[in-house]
Length: 93
Image (tube, rainbow, N blue to C red):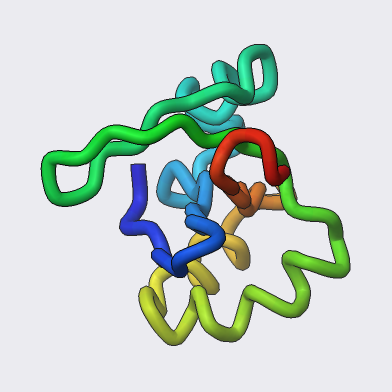
């Protein structure tokens, strides 16, 4: 999985798979079961994951590319729309 962007109310991750033509398995698993557990600083909490809408991805993309410039190259090399995943604490998503 790629490095996430942490905020108090959400975690954002990119399902880039290096620009491969198919989505990574972990993303496929999230589609089937969006309930996840996230561990930060030895504390595990329940979160819910969802694919960002096109509008959300558009708004987040510049920040994500600034955090990892490779994302834009990955998107450029594949016809697949690379998913952006937003996780929120369970019960708030």
